[in-house]
Length: 606
Image (cartoon, rainbow, N blue to C red; front, top):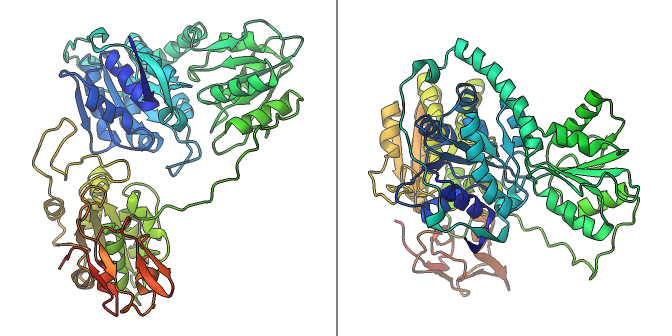
């Protein structure tokens, strides 16, 4: 064993490697991404790792590995679980042979997500056991225990870190590589009565699942991950207690240091719920405050148990307004809630808390090719009735002024379906759907097939910056490399579109503004489904060697370069435009727009 200072996601990856994981796959999504990336960096030669094209495919790959007796880890964020839910629900009914751990990172806040959905609730719905770590060290241990539970009970198991666990850092003790478990893979054994899911098999297995989860309630009541602190029945006659889990356990422990001891139930397995332990905790208490994020999972379970066992304990939490019903909790909010619950004054902060930081909205990077793509479409369609359907990615930031080019954004790939429906309903409107190159492979293909088959009429814009930029520049099928470090044949977006039946496919550099505008005008008026691929690399990967300069003698102070594209490298001082060479990437879009020819330099894209 040795100590390492690691991120929570790194701890999970190291825990999986220590458990002898054989296969790791997933799809990048903040806050889960670093788990798979760490496995790729630290894996041994017998561990296979890949970025799959989406979460559904990743779940099926991991499930197949578990069929063969391998230990498999599949990673995603809470939104990705929606995509993976079809195979997951069936995997739960058919069961697994090897250990299958489903890492789903939830995002209270939400900090970088569309929703605040709670995987603990999904666990109950899907009947899949879930472990809820409160720290990096606990996440390291839990992923190893999750593999044991999965194999023993032949079920997938969720590991549900939240953002503060996934992205928090701590010094933890980890195994040396020579201490890692070596997990042999038996191989797939043909047995259609087990691996082919038919209604009769599902019916029988449903009964077994319910019996297993009832058994796990008792097993988890005796698991040290779930505990009562302190074990004494009551503290100095205080007939109140706190029930918590996940990272909120850390907040409660911080609050207890300031407010004094209070009996606490730590729930690390919210499903199946540790019923016997919870009942022992409730006995003798008049009131319990449930401190948790997102859904009132613990609160509902305790209310149910009070009814089942005839306990008079009053359960407080989200449903009673004592804990916020949405958003992320904090050390201060939990301390204030707990102080009110204990009838104590809120401890004063010393020294005085600093003022809140100013709000800085996110923007597209200076020189980002997406800015040029949006601007080209905007100029080409000026004066026409249009709708611009966006998607999830860096390019969602195209909604900001002055571009204002994202009219809708729902989930990955949804822009294609929305554009089709609006066109069917409003024939006089030109419809556009924007999608990134990674998302194109992940979730856009069925939308394109549907459009061609159902004779829709819209323009698909593929923003190809040669990477998965939003989540940290992971490879995808169009980049020509894999997470195993292999150089492979790129999957051509042009060929895929043409193979589906899109006959009008144009590829252009968006930073060649004149040509880009002409291409949009020409293509948008064609009938049926047509596509434009705006191809230019992400500036974070390929920084230009030359910057633009602005001649103050030629600048007429019209602000067109600032008003039209909103590049963060441009500002206005002393009646003249100014370029910040520290931010400028020399894309020359501003130079191409300048009516006075005051901007020069950069790298030509003509």
